[in-house]
Image 1 (cartoon, each protein chain N blue to C red):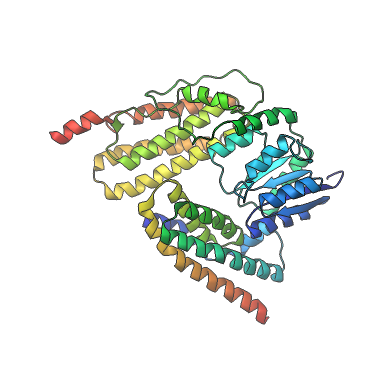
Image 2 (cartoon, each protein chain N blue to C red):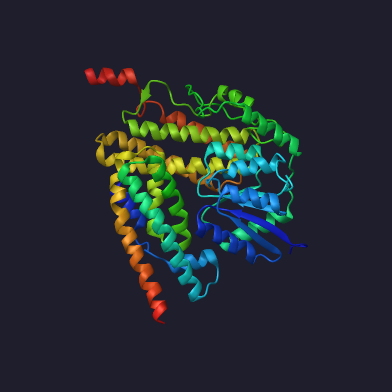
Length: 324
Length: 128
């Protein structure tokens, strides 16, 4: 039960969703909601009223949800910079997650969410304080972003190999992409899983899905060994599981179009193993370090088995075969 | 692709008010009717924009509209329509344009079915 009354600002550009949030918050005892359908109205409310929590969608009319978050944390608004901030979004993409984590967002709520579930989340964050850095920390970060010319995000480069999993020493709770300078460092790091250059299964769409899976699992591995916040790990885990689902979907469809029954037979054997690993990843307690590390080792082993002959071959070999 | 989408919506009701109740908690008949009417109005406008974007092959608009519609439809219990929007958004983000025409062909049909369900429900309650 809350000891005092709280004002919560909810922001979503879809009226139905905004009213849904508004209704859910107003049902919580001692909580009253303010609502805004765009970033501009939200800013006005943040300037005029005392807001104790922000729940916002990311994709709203300018300024967008991330911009609101940055301004609050950087102390650019009269609202306290350390209020709990919850993101309520249909999607969470890597770049957005990374930025939100750098600004210490308290939680990601994935749409759709029930009244009850939302109420529980709100209560939890009102009663459990999270450590938020002083405003100048975020202001520095924000200024750095403003000073930098905007470039499209780059994908980390691919190299051949699978890494051996090791346990990283515990780090301070700073978020996993705290400053723009570190992005270069991240990109220089070796991916956990790599697609061998000039190699192919002979089916472009399948190569693409396998590369996507490797990329997502590498991202998960990256946040896990860096001992990042749970919310970052959860987001990467979700994307990895989605990549596995999509791989299954693609295989099912490609199988009908492409011949090569022997290839598909062997690939499906591997896919069954991957699905089992995927299920374990989905259910794994991410705080259980050794269990996750063991699981990552098994993923790495699976990858090494799969990206070699007979399923994956060097492009030169494939071309030679075609000429023969 | 076809079978996968069809199988993913197989057995799904066009409009499931139990889902709506599960998201909102307990609702009176009037509240349900009001939510459905509001959904119909707001989602109808987005649906039009999505249809136009698909016709014009405007990728960003397709993603944006499908993204908005999927959540609105999901909390209202329009599960088939929500699933369709999820698939459209996903295909766009994966650059799988070749599969889009097929999904787009479902869009009008599903909206019509949804429209009928909502109208049947709201007029029924209006008469009562």
